Length: 173
Image (cartoon, rainbow, N blue to C red; front, side):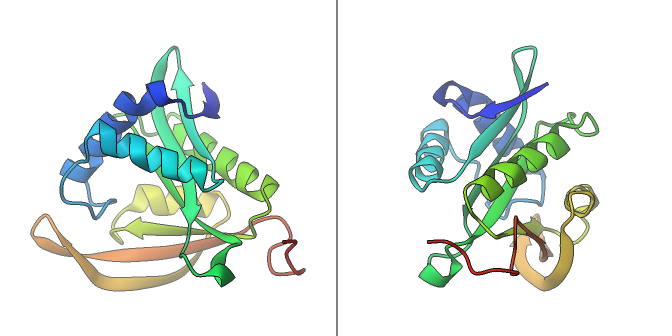
């Protein structure tokens, strides 16, 4: 398995992976799976914003993807990123999620970010919560019943991980 920057040619695979989780899962609070053109637009926005967008590939197959975005738009948040990690259906427990998250952490640290926030859909999403905990994230809160999807109220779990020097020193820039 290799972790590499996302290319435009990866858009169909990413669209299929994300579309599955939008339709069948509770990690994303979107209700309609976006088309390839929208995924391509979102990818461009991530890259144009100076954030990393990665894929895990094995034998020519995309196993998953991960990217970081601004946590919130206000300038004081400029050293904080929010992560997203998705693995293809049936692809769990092959190490792609952990490899992607580790590479994303490393790349965001290299770019000078100081905090990564995981906004995890559904407090019963034990695979994602476990993945983030194994990567050094700590539980920082739950927003109970904040979303309505699949005929039920869903929580959002917040987890954070300091990057680089974290809060110990002032940032540069």
